[in-house]
Length: 61
Image (cartoon, rainbow, N blue to C red; front, side, top):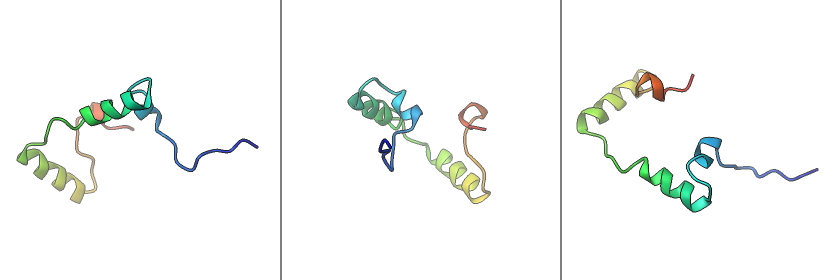
């Protein structure tokens, strides 16, 4: 029986690059743009309502 790791990288993470270094760099780039204070408030309010903050295209159904 082949061994399977307990934790594996998500396919969306793997899609960020062809090497582990490229995936890591791509992941970090996603966070280069900071939220505005207004966005922070919207995120907090959505979280307290049990909702997801984001556009329709960013929500996985």
